[in-house]
Length: 505
Image (tube, rainbow, N blue to C red; front, side, top):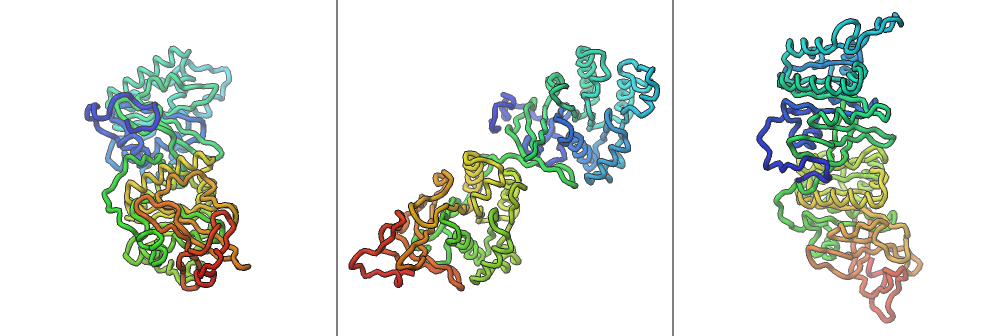
């Protein structure tokens, strides 16, 4: 089983009989369903009003039009004109010009005479069931959307009649060899447990003040990816972002070291940062963490390798300006396609959307270095507490390691000086390498130092070196062998040492 929860079928995917797949029209949903719906089965899309149920139906039928399938939209809620207008607003106008719509919504005339009470299963004197049968027989559709199926409940005499009616309807559609998407309004007052029971698969949409989500709770005859997945709705329709599954992705690569281009820094790291490793660059604000990470990207660009940096705590214009101020040619790197700089607005992106974008960078753009700058901003973006930050970063870093990508995480510590701390979050275990930067107060001057705390793939230099960002870039000095107490926040020179602050800049 590859899904992350216990909600999928117990049948192993390897033991399932071969069965055709019908694309849903949503790439992300197809990935979650391991290829799409199973053909000639029915699937329930449920949720409260406004979550995007009908929109999933639009995507399904539009994909059918592009595949030259025969399609049919059976509407029990809105007028046909409203359906076509809504489809056009999401960019489906062209496809839906040819989609036949069976309009069974009640017109205003239904209520003009309060004394008229129509029998169940009749709207304005015509049998709903019979009209559906006639239209299906006439069109012989490959794909059908019924929106909303729960409307049958109001045309039934009681619950038993409703269940019998729905079962008979689903059996008829199955015999017509159509793949069917049903929608259902699910509220506390009108639960749809009975419809879920009768469906071959269940897709639940949800919407809160912070996020839209999708979850599969049932999918007969096939494996699927469990858990909640992110959804975004805009003028182009719906996009589904599957939760990242690191174990599903792996690439062959050689763990060669990547040089920083600064000889003294490479000496600290015994050659550089190996491919397929995660490096945490830690330090207080303004000490040079982002610039240090960008230095590896600059060197990679010289070899023609592509890198991407996700800015969570800094504007793109600021990053470009201060990089160019130290002769780091970031704009030229962007123009050559060896660097992508993406500014992430806080609270506007889910972790699934971020991982989807990173996957595109790795799998489509052949990106070799990914930098997350920084972890605090990442936490705000995914709207999670510290525990969730660790969980999400663990999955992301595992994926990047499996794909042979060099990952750089920028972590900030609160104190400028004082007792040493690697990061505010308990994530140091995720890192193969920990590179830290510190401020030092020496002889009345504020200085900086760089050191390596951890390196899994090789040995490393266990000394501190002076660190400086000049107008020509990063400068790393000789080892500060005569300095003690740096990690305690009390740096001092050893008496009689020949080393001085001026010689270790």
